[in-house]
Length: 204
Image (cartoon, rainbow, N blue to C red; front, top):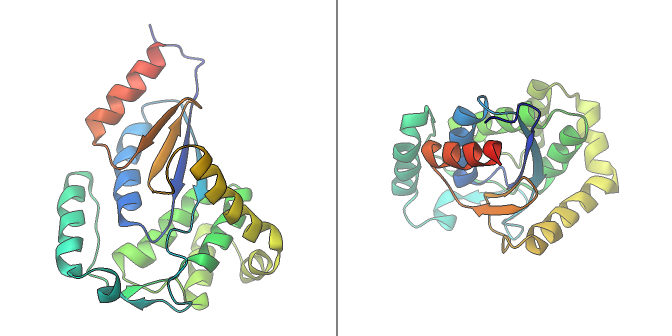
């Protein structure tokens, strides 16, 4: 029997540069509207060694076109779109702003806007002008962006997120999820697997 008072908390560890995070969340989003879910986001910088302004995608992947084709094919049943991208951004600054958005209840629109810019349009999330556009689309201002970049608390939040991810058993990989405070899930699951997991939790 369904427990109508139950709320399932899902903590997601992600980096905005991560195509697998994009795919995984896209799949989860097709399912989660059917369940009482509270999403909590923890932004983790997985490529801190990337040059500050980003680098050519070919430096990160030997065959970018093949890689993007793989993501595109896996996401097609869920309406995912992704372009062939030539820039691999450094996400340190935009993740600090993402944490600011998170603190102000705007994580969801910020993630959507960032992925629209990066995944759909191939724009460089290292560029502060792009970061400001993403922030504005999510409901923030240029002043908010500057505040996020100058206050040390958001830098500390990224450090905390990385430590929390490792302590939770993710090994630092993303996407990763802690479900209901008990279960660790890493990688990408299809919609049927998510539905099975969530159905079991609703019955417990």
